[in-house]
Length: 103
Image (cartoon, rainbow, N blue to C red):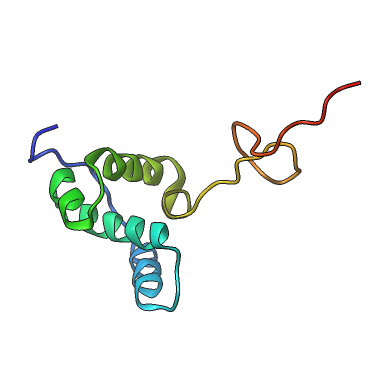
């Protein structure tokens, strides 16, 4: 991935306002804040490697955040999915808790 590699992130005005509110608000999880910064900088046209350097993340993490935005919108990019499919309403690919043995 070259230094000039860019991804297309176009934030709507409401999404820009939501990011501004999140970043100027109170306590937030660090991952959420970093992802918000990544999206804002990518939307400003910065290259993946430059965003990675400026946020202390890897280029792969920056790229993955952009992909999560493309696939799941702002909510999908900023917040973690639940990882346990054993409970109604939670999505994910695997369980975090051991399964009870079948009898």
